[in-house]
Image (cartoon, rainbow, N blue to C red; front, side, top):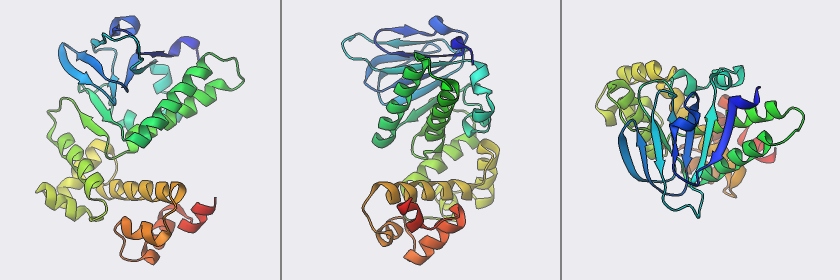
Length: 267
């Protein structure tokens, strides 16, 4: 991987797309900036957000206070995004960088901390002479994109005229909000006032997976996190996630992952 294919800078002062106009930009605004202008549209007082911007966009981060950094900008070449390690991610399949829309991710507090750690590690590696640093950087990028793509509660779109994309966005928000109550596609279709068949058609067209996959993905993500990072019992976790019995939760988890919840907890 050539040195110029990836670059990361802190957001300390006003920044524009002209500085790296041939690259894709991933802008993580952690601490509030005065404004973010994208293609002559101004978004004021932006914070805790990740924007994905193609080289076709013109953008400017407006920042008056230079005493505190507001986040990071990660610049990437096509060569990096086309790497086989990253090519199968949904973030590429949906063409977030090229759709003509501006994808915006809102991060939950836990994911925000991990995102900062990942970007800081990438920054350190870029300035190092360690063996296999390219492999490590790609691995960290993959983790970063997986977090962005996999969290059902963070994805929204600044401007969106595609009705199917809009339905998928609303569906993902509903899954995040109601996952403890509803585990069936039909429940979410009812909330959206559409048929389960049409909901599945929309999700498959936009994300290339089934509606059920989105629900299962969210259940597994939350159950893994609780099993790894909480002291709750398996029984408590199962009821918290809306399973009728701990046995059914264990059956679901093993059928999806190949291991039991207790095995994951011990690992």
